[in-house]
Image (cartoon, rainbow, N blue to C red; front, side):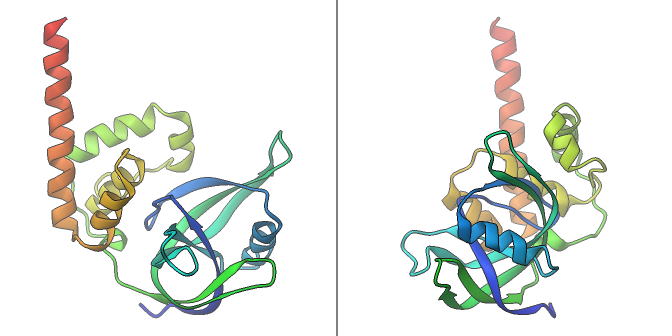
Amino acid sequence: MSIQITSIPVFPLPVCILIGGVTELRIFEPRYIRLVSEASLGQGFVMSHYDIDKPFTSSDYGTVVKIIDFETLDDGMLGIKVQAQSMVSLSNFSQDDDGLHRADATGIEHWSGQEKAQYDATLAGPLENLITNHQELQSYFPAGEYNNLAWVCARYIELLPLSNSKKQQLVFQQDLTQCQAFLKTLVQGEREQGVETENKK
């Protein structure tokens, strides 16, 4: 990856977002309002995994996101919608006077960015059904890439109620084939449990 950004704002959050992902954030702290203002100029900002044991409460990896929409919420907070662009490694952390964290970001190759067409009915079908029947998710992904296995697996990891440690393992310690195998086992298990529960009624 050729991405190299110096001193980009970093927002550590207990949120997992991979390439192609979309999420909404509520902004109220002055430092993050400034982050939004700066990110709106074009280079975006990095969402990293919140890690209390790290000096800057941030993991060494993150996702560059761009702001695709924003609004003032009923409670007066700023709501922004962001879309993930690329995965990066982070180094040379620093902190502004108001507490905003920064780091140098270097692009990394990641399985969630693969665009090779590969359809897995076991995973794609339930995901398409979930997104189609969920208004908010449908607004995030109006044209889902269900024939792209990497896109499908990335959305599952973002949406499933897995522990943060498990998500981090899937994102950074396993490849696409390993993620696919884990998710298929999970989805098939839930289907079987659902059938069993239905039969007991």
